[in-house]
Image (cartoon, rainbow, N blue to C red):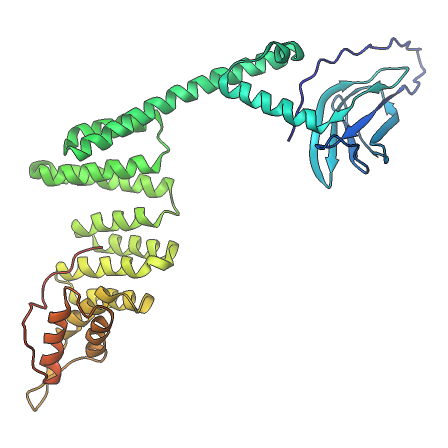
Amino acid sequence: MLTRFRNLALLLGAFVVFAGLASAQTSGVEGIVKGADGQPVKGAVVKFDRTDIKGHYEVKTDKKGHYGHYGLPLGTYDITVEIDGKMADKLNKVRTQLGDPITENFDLKASQQQSQELAHAAATGTLSKDQERSMSAEQKAAFEKQNKEREATIAKNKALGDAYNAGKAAMDAKNYDDAIANFEKAIAVDANQAVIYSQLASAYEANAAAKPAEAQAMRDKEFEAWKKAVELAPTEAAYYNNYALALGKAKQIPEMQANIEKAAQIDPSNAGKYYYNLGAVLMNSGQNDPACAAFKKAIDTDANYADAQYQYGVCMVSKASIGKDGKVVPPPGTIEAFQKYLQLKPDGVNAEAAKAMLASMTGAVSTKYVNPNAKPTSK
């Protein structure tokens, strides 16, 4: 929207009111509409919206860009120019007069330049002398108010940035108490930044590990921070995933599963990673059956997720039985999971372990033994 500030030196026509008799008093407005290229605009729609009482009128420009409405009721109007259905320029509070029509030209090229100059003035808080002269007292007051708000915003952003950066620096230096204090300070400046709550949660997590005696209290505050982060950024899957991992460490498994599911719904492209993380926590806490289900979800979501294939195979081995011939009888899908892992990562860190597991199930000879029961880590 391009809005111009103008001095409106309009002559107010005198009129006489006769008792018991109301006479219609009309006025007129005309002018030229020029486009951003400086040429007259044909077919532009000029709209007159009366602001003192309800009233709406429209005219179109001719081939010379001229418009004119000569039967407007005397009053105050907002005049809008539309080109191709889009507002191109606007004048507010134009007061019409009796007698000759007033002239209001629209020069979009000049308006754009003036708009850019005003935007620069708003950004710097400094008006040129010409801009000051062109403004009414109300417009100057509005500009000064905007300038004060701008200065307040700059000060707020500086305080926010300083506190946040100090918190990050303290985290890097492993000064977790200082990190927490600075992130809390940043939140006091602006309590609607999800990323700050995310960093605060991480600081509490680190402090819980560093201070075992205070771990429970730190974890409670960590969970509060994660809850606030996902509340403020409900479409940020990473926050749900990280919150879920924190819950998993505290063995709050149902809550962890709920947040993993939420992350997978929001970010299907990384759902395999989220389900893998769930499976890792479940397996490491001795919950084998739910872990198998989580790893299965991971590979169903992403069949090329090699680590999930391997961990699913390991998980399913625990369900194997011994046949009458003394051979291992793995559940369906177990061998295929190890084979898929080797196809995807023939030189992966779990490649030898996968070969060993396949050998134990198929009778092939393994040349190297690697512990297949090593605990998986979250991604």
